Amino acid sequence: SSGAVGAALETAFPPVTVSVLAFRESAGAEGGSQMLRVRLSADLLNSVGVAVAHGTRPPAVGWERNSANKLGPRLMDLSSQLDPIALATASVELNLRLMRWRLMPALEPERVGATRCLLLGAGTLGCAVARCLLGWGVRTISLVDAGVVSYSNPVRQSLFEHSDCVGAATPKAAAAAQSLKKIFPSVEATGHELAIPMPGHAVSAAEIEQVKADVEKLHRLIKEHDVVFLLTDTRESRWLPSLLAAAERKLAITAALGFDSFLVMRHGVHAPRGVETADSGAEAAAPGRLGCYFCNDVVAPANSTLRRTLDQQCTVSRPGLSMLASAMAVELMVSLLHHPHGASAEADADVEGRREAHAQATQSPLGLVPHQVRGFLSAFRSDCMVGRAFDKCTACSAAVLSAHEAQGFDFLLSAFNRAAYLEELTGLSQMHREAEAALESLEFFGDDEADEDF
Image (cartoon, rainbow, N blue to C red; front, side):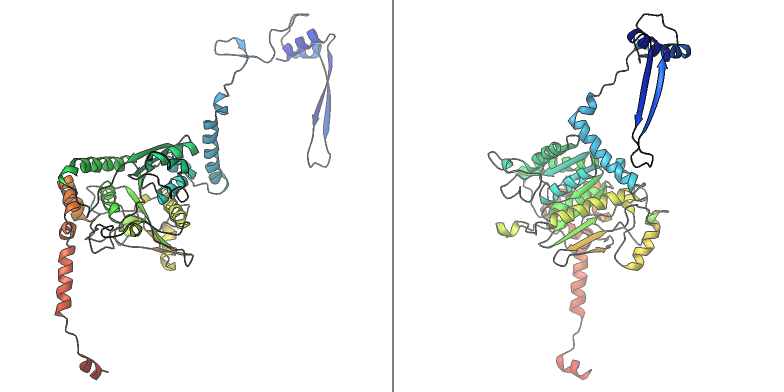
């Protein structure tokens, strides 16, 4: 209080008359710096404060009453602010909030950060996707891979180092998760060493229990996460995750690489169980559900590595391609999270009329939400395309989902072991027979008869 200050001055500097100079520099002001001189005396201070006995030093100056109504200093625990992990966490959050404060008020970094992401594949695509998710503040990242780090990996896969290749074999999933924690200790990163069962890769009697356990674990992981990234090397390895994501109504995003081209697409999400059609929102106006990765196929997935040499089995692509595709995949997820219809949002395409029409209904502050992005590095071009769900799709059609729900692992075992099972189940085999019959029934003109018509 002012009385206590006066008593302190009188005790320390009798007789108390103190000149106080207040100096303030005004940068850029025309008047330059300002100075104020104030003369204080103990009599003046005591007249407006609480009198203190002459000649005694106050017990404290500047203390406050605490919860026990006793005078004491205000204490602040700054240890948390000095913790390097806390500093890193605060800095990452601040960087994302700056995007909202300065450029995009509708941005929801907290929603993005709370999204639980499952990455199937911890290779070139998996590492790049994980790093991009860290940049968006995603806190829960799980990686699934059955491989180990090889000597060729660290230069192309950003979460591995040369030391991961030396000595005992290092599982990719665990090494990638550990690397994520080194980069950002607050992330909840876990690695799962798991082989994804595939159609065309027969399961022997001795392998059934292990394959069943792998299927159950993969199914559980997909249930526990919000978004599933399909980043594996082969086409058939994406079949089971596509099926399980469709069954659980989860957002699945596929990224696939060629030598100088890439595909990034989101799988169409089925309506919730018990809801046949949507009566409002984007789905009501859409001509049909968006397709999945397998909806363009007229054959079931098979063993793509069969009768291929080792060099033919390796994915060979231009080094920068994986970073482009991975960034597209993550940004597509973030754009969908900000859309009012989420994963069910209708797709935007490159056709200008459709782009303008959808832009009026799209509320995502980050812009368009395409279905497929196909990139061509040789031409430095990317195109947005739309593909509708195929009623005979081997991964997401009603026949496949119903069979999986009714038969469970027995259905999957038939798909793994019998090459024609999925085609017979979905009606693709019948479609093939009808197409062959139609071709045989066609009568082609001979050369002479064709010439007479012109």
